[in-house]
Image (cartoon, rainbow, N blue to C red; front, side):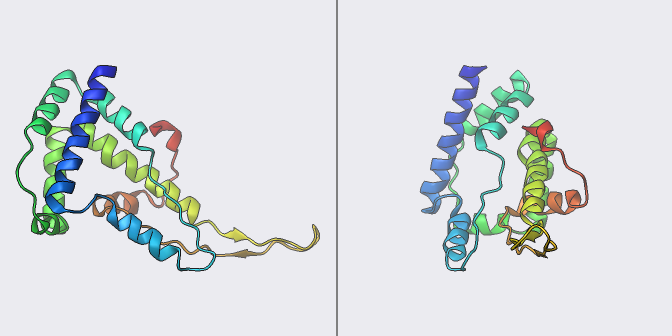
Length: 178
């Protein structure tokens, strides 16, 4: 399984490099921009709240059958179609995004579960943790506790918004998906 995992990781890096080369921009630019803007706000904490990539990757590979791994690897090996900025903009349209998600669920339901659904749970949990009230320091133990609301700006991929909304009012256990 280690060899297969390593090969899949190399293929995904190839795809990422292909996208970066085609678009002339690195993935995750929105997060770099969010960090830049957050650094302009006094006392603003910047928190990366996604599940660690190695955990997601390991769970995704483990969820696929041998033949699904072969099918995915084959598709990634021969991905060479040009990608334009217009293609990226089209992916931002809700209908197209939902259609692409439905196709992914149809072909690789376990991959969708680990890459999207589980990360929706993790992202929701982390956003809820960040949104907890902030306890102000007390001058003495006898002074009553005072709280202020946290202000949170969450930057997430469009495909995660429906899952975050769905999970927001649920009790979440992220240990199950780590």
